[in-house]
Image (cartoon, rainbow, N blue to C red; front, side, top):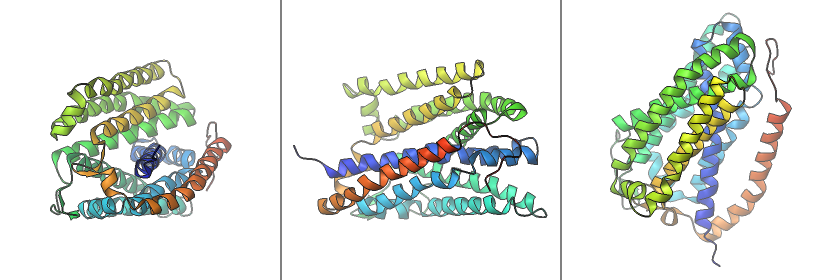
Length: 334
């Protein structure tokens, strides 16, 4: 049996991207919700729920971006020029947001400035990620082995819709994370946020899902053709189940279920992207096999990944285990 290393690596990078979206998604969501929290004490409590883990969450972004550069250099060379403004905005937002973690607890005079910076950095990074997703889904113009589009191809109504969906989705992850990690008034407020955010998220997932198959003929065939449409139907069925779990978890005032249900909605939405994209890495025409580095390079890098990825999983899981449970006012890890 011949092992296709390019598809193994596509799976590993997809896993890294999904891990980043889920783990950094809820702490970016905390930043998006920041202005809507009651007061400074509650805002700092919300920051303390993510303080022990936020920087580790971004490990997966480095792994995904670095892996794309090393393993699929052609895709990297095409995608980066197409999305330069969005990538730069995302990185600047993440950097400024990271600085706020250090300064917001070390200054009194400019504390408000750093709190605004935490919110702005989170929002800018999230919008940039959402617009990049939309630009990738609608397709990138390729001329030979280089990007062939314009400077503003990423700015479209569809990319605006996906950006709004990601902002609402991250905010929903943040709200359900606060339900999981806090008590008292903060928990009640987070649950109050989660209800309308959940409705908005379901509506936006529906709009994006309805629009996506009509962006390209191959998407339409994969979702509504036969027999591929029968397999693709599993995704919306499971998504409906996750939505039901979210609703019942919020209605029954569960602490864990709303967060897990929101995570499931993200995972299934990500799976829907996989249905639309496969076997392309960069729609509409650059396939996984075409974009991959030579097999010798893939094998060499895979040896390192087999060691590195389990190590990341172990220390990530251990950090979440150590800092499990509720966070109370006065607790701090900064």
